[in-house]
Length: 72
Image (cartoon, rainbow, N blue to C red):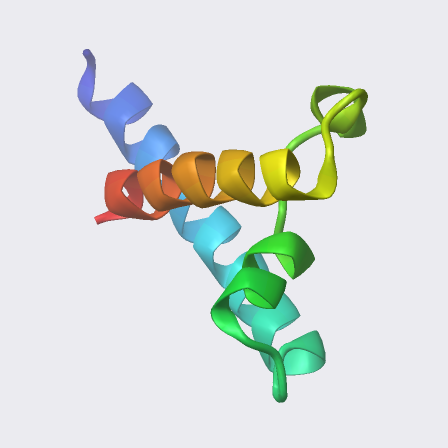
């Protein structure tokens, strides 16, 4: 990967992290961990169709955990 593409990718991840942080600060002051994952969900709505509440929480926990690990 070229240096410019790597820099652009890192900037994109940084901007996403800032957006999530802003959401947490604005909406997540009194929320639990599960509620925070729902608040900052960046998945398009079509992925949530047809899933029960528990399935949605499990899906978000798996995908958001991966997302945050990949930011580091």
